[in-house]
Length: 256
Image 1: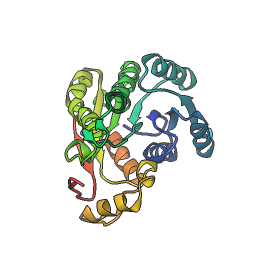
Image 2: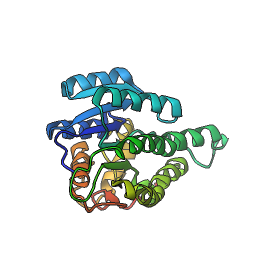
Image 3: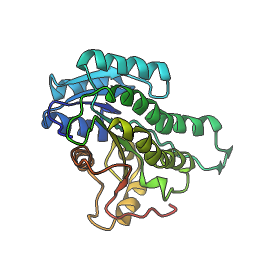
Image 4: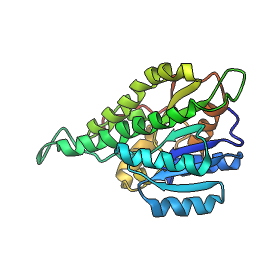
């Protein structure tokens, strides 16, 4: 799919991977709807991107909030061609810690934001994508890119909730791609390694440095524009579908 002239919905679009992806879309002639819980930050990001970007408040966990936001996107832009789901949280917690078993409320929150929120958004976007005029001879009407994590495969100590949520995103990639194939909508997932996002930036050096050491090459944190570059490749390459792609400098996560 050619990005030029297309409309992209990006959850978690106010910062980190989502912001870098929004900039990439705008730089290549597209328009972006930044969906984020932090409306003020999303508005700042939209302002920095210029007239091709708009900010919308959303709680991706909530059906009505997401529907209201997507309806507002349709009213503002008239179509949705690309959906990139970057909204996510990753609070750590051992299954049984010093204070007892992990809070079920915390576990559920992570699942709701990372897994349910991803599906909630993509299902609403896909419903509008199927009405698009095909973009090419393959009958393509839309592209969905979800964000998992290498923790979906090698979760560390304290990542039971996070790994479960991201494993769910990986697990639904193929069946959702199969569901939407008849509508000409492709679905892929990116599983990033250790990236310099606000989530990891808040971690102390004692957490970050061993992760960098575990990468093969290059020995550094991933950069958000590198994530955005892979999103672009997925969108523009019509033969990528139903795939989860690791973007991780060869890291294989250790228990700690």
